[in-house]
Amino acid sequence: MKFLILISCVIALIFTPGCPTQNQVTTPITSTYRMAAEWEPVIGSIIAWPLIIPKPLVIELAKGKMLLYVMVSDEINRYEAENTFKEWGMNMDNVHFVVTRLGLAWGWPRDWGPFAVYSDSGAYSLADPQFVTYPLAGPDCDGKMRLDLYPKERYIGDDLASSSLADSLGFDIFPLAAAVTGGNFLVDGRGTAFSTCVIQMENRSLGLSDEDLFKLIKEKLGINKHVILPNYERIGIQHIDCAIKPLDEETILVMRVPKDHHEYNIIEEIAQKLQSLTDTYGRPYRIIRIDTGRHKNEGVAAYTNSLILNKKVFMPLFGIPEDKQALKTWQDAMPGYEVIGFENNILVPVMGYTGWQSFDGLHCRVRAIWDPGMLRMAHRRMDNPVDLAKSWPIEVKIQDYSKAGLIPEELKLCVRTHRDQEWQTIMLSSTRNPNIFQVSIPGVNSGEAVEYYLSAADKSGRRETLPRTAPDNFYSFTVK
Image (cartoon, rainbow, N blue to C red; front, top):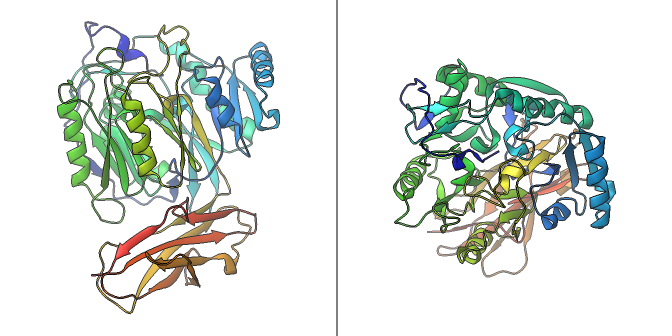
């Protein structure tokens, strides 16, 4: 729930001690767990009633094979929600209600909702961090912060809701003894997380040191590298998802505010810090900038606060001229994805504001439910350019979490030169590691550009490609 920025900046803040912020923290301990990234396969999503998202978005979330789990506080609310969805003509076979106690943050499941965690053996479970309240902090990572603006008792229902959801879904769930708010914890699926330093400030106030925090999320979530970025709001909840967005393990979308905006310098500092880091494959991150404009006084349109859900991107529209360019930026950054924009004029009960905010966008109000039996693929794409060679060997990791078994003849490399229309298919070869497969890309002449993608299928009926929207999108490199 992202309303606290609206509170007057003259509120007296309490002092919270701390130590200097680190740009990147690597924890040298071994974990047997992996936390899923947003772009990985999902079975559906979570929202809450009363709605604070628009009707077209709700309908879209329940289309096709997508399941929609609606959190409601009692049977009366369930009845109201069900009747409303029937009136809208929604496929009610895709809609499931979870009756549970809800609190003040009921409509922001991104923040209090559980994380999907996979063990090395493929077991699936949900991690349930503590959800105590929302912090209100300024840009100083060692400065003052307030956690008691609203009584903690008003959030107890939100803290308990994940357990009710897990019971409804039949998933195992385990508690995580730290405040890890979803809007300030973005991951790449390969052991890296991104947060602003308010995550440290909040956990220190709960008696958890930085060292213990990083150790805990490493052991329980498999986060080995935690990138800590500066707080960027003058005063607010400082959630990172309103400023940046990992699009895959090597690409990060970063907002760019007008030069005369008070956040300009700090956002540029964040962009530079990200550019100076290396991704999971040891290469500099590919940074894509998305221009934003003023929205409701000095707020800016949080276009990074969008949701990637299977092969769609749901983006908030703010009714400003920059909306059109932001849609194009997303489309250019995510080839093959369907990018859909949503306006929102719904009044948020209790909080008194309407629609999307600079600190509270679409991503905050919907949470994915990842596929327990997903077919996952990971691959270090080729460097670009490459040296001339007879062939270029590559590897791909394929994990069949369904345990149904891979289909050998469906494990393929598809490759062509940029001048060809047809794809050449080459079968992948197994290795001693049952999850690692190898193949070689045939050599071409100097100056040629090579395009390729990888595909797999398992006996559960799941099919995947890398990139996920191939062949509409593909990897490419040029030969020196």
